[in-house]
Amino acid sequence: MRSVTYSMNVSLDGYIVGPDGGFDWTAPGDEVFRHWIDEIRDVDVHLLGRRLYETMLYWETAAEDPSLGEDDREWIALWNPLPKVVFSTTLSAVQGDARLASGGLAEEIERLRAEPGEGEIAIGGATLAAQAAALGLIDEYRVMVYPVLVGGGIPFFPRDERRVDLELVETRTFGRVVYLRHRVVRREA
Image (cartoon, rainbow, N blue to C red; front, side, top):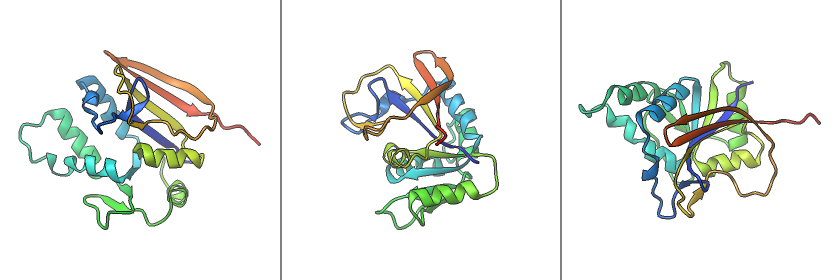
């Protein structure tokens, strides 16, 4: 069965954006960006909430910028053709290789897991990931922890007071940034 993964940058105090909506502290260095490029290679479909979708629209036309580096162009070559499912109640249309979700989150993930393929189903966006977590649908949490305390904003982890046991499967350091990868421990009933 295809795994559902949730990967994002996060402040040390647990937020993906600060109270002002800013995330300038997450500007990746070359090594971190290389990591994200390598990770996206294993993804077959990416699920996004509206805010992250709108943020990532930049890449749809970024290739027109002649000043982009080799890594940026490699990201574009991987990201733009990647199928994306956007969950939004306010958008009526999406661009690029994206479609609006036709069903609820659980139904979409169930359908995608049933499709042939070995690649991951990636979730981006804390609000969407919180919904998936509440439904017990996330198999792995992948966190790029930045050494900054932002004091509030949108949390990486849902605040639903539900215990989830995790197994640490990988750690890496990229200068001042630490990558943590945890697999959800499923207990047999």
